[in-house]
View (cartoon, rainbow, N blue to C red):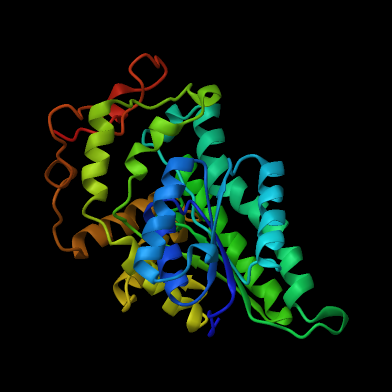
Length: 337
């Protein structure tokens, strides 16, 4: 997408963090922006911040308060965008996300349902709800001229790791979805992009505070201390506006994957490293062990987790299973201190 001025964007999770950064950047680029979140007070504050940053008019921003996991509410939001702005979005960015940490074998149905519901199912819903509308309006059918349109999802570097956690599993699936949609939309004049950041300066560390009451049977140890620690880690991440600028450049240049750097080569090398275990899975156990020993012999020494991931007092147990889960081997819990 080369031209943003006068077009319409719809962004989820846009009341703060990465989604708010995207709303600011694309509003400044001249777009009318619909921002979606489930917190009305945060949306109200976000509108003021977007106007202040971008210089746009308040009437160019549409705030939509609803739960993304409610499909009917999602459909109603799409209807509202068309009613208010006259057309479906030219740019759809699905950024809302939640996360929690613990051993994958401790994960409960509620852990999967909560994380997958926001990080994957809501992306699927967004695509199924919006893409047909975008194709009808901008795909060149029935004599209607083609217009640029683009769908994007905020995934994660975790989507390349092949991990079994609810979060990594969801992000792997989001990556695959966006690759497929990019192939499908190209003949209509559309494109798809997946943004894969690492650490972002957001408040996702507080996500557990907003977990729905019917999904509270978590398998992980969560406390005020672990959430505070996670917030301190995220505070060192990339600025959301800077990340949004990198995304904008990616859309302008037709990138299918956008990595969190204007010079992404170092991240490409990291992704290659993530893929090594998957390349070795078809080998026998003895063959894998030999490969691992060869890599270890040829690699530079690295610091241990004990040096890299010390947690402050009060955050003990970060990333651990709930203590009362008698089927979990306690030695599997990380030793951060």
